[in-house]
Image (cartoon, rainbow, N blue to C red):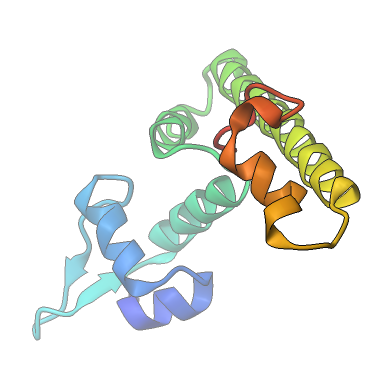
Amino acid sequence: MLSIGKLSAATGVKVPTIRYYEEIGLLPEAERSAGNQRLYGVKEQERLAFIRHSRELGFPLDDIRELLSLSDQPDMSCAAADVIATRQLVSVKDRITRLQALQQELERMLTQCAQGTISGCKVIEVLSNHENCLHAHHGEV
């Protein structure tokens, strides 16, 4: 059995995050030692590794919860998991498209900047008025 600190070291997940995952039910409530210290076994370590890897791939917590539920049913079709992964891929491609638009906009601002004074600075001008942008929608990524 691992303490929360050792589980953190073994998985690379910070202690507060482990506690949070327990709080929201992604990890089962830990067993406790006689001194009330959280204790984790191999199954919890593997589950936490699954969660961490899923987060690294950008999956939202609700999708991870669903994927964990599916992984608890090994004889079930993987169609539902494919739907979740496909949805994540679409989301990633959308973010890439928006990031490319941001890159183009920043490059254009810098290219057009005459490097004179702030009064004629293209960077300041574009940032001051969204209508000067090439792309109308390059909000959050």
